[in-house]
Image (tube, rainbow, N blue to C red):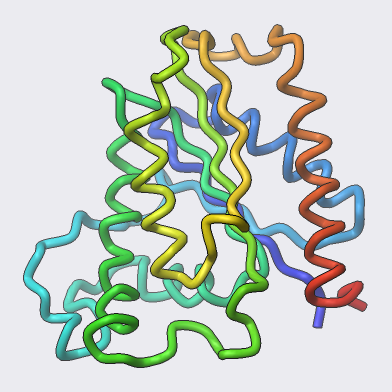
Amino acid sequence: MPLHVLAIAGSPRRHGNSETLLDRVIASIREEGVEVEKVALTEVTVNPCRGCNACEKLNKCVQRDDLDWLGPKLLDADCVILAAPIYCMGICAQAKALIDRAQVFRSRKYVLKLPVVPPERKGKRLGVFLSTAGQTWDYVFDAAVPSVKCFYHVMEIRNADISYLMVNGVDLAGEIEAHPAAKADAAALGKDLVKTMRERFGDGN
């Protein structure tokens, strides 16, 4: 089966700094001949979690929105990349809504005791968090990382299999273009991801 990467642009601002970072990683992955499917959360509807816990009985969310098709893609991809900026010291609302709706996977895993992914794929899938922030503080990403870890954990992606590329001090649209290391770091990350996926899943041919 061909390798498949799902890339999610989580920012409410299209083609801003976090999505630019994402596009650089995507380009690097595609240069290695691997398929990447990109979804922008501004172009789909993922409503906030209602906290109703119905998924603990139904094994699915009671809301009917684009998570109906996006949810299975999150579980089918060999690598899931989430790109989202930091707003007010936390991950932006659009990406957080997606993370919160992963509650359905938590219910499946811990309450219903059902498999989230096939057993042979556990411990193989990869996760990536790309983020940008306007502030220059070294702790600006600290509040977002635990949410991201939870998101991947309930999808059976281990902490050790999550990669991070987080760039602070870029606020205005396009500022990341002048960053001295972001472009090279993104390209290197893309190639590293492909290498690891091929080691774990085969060459995808």
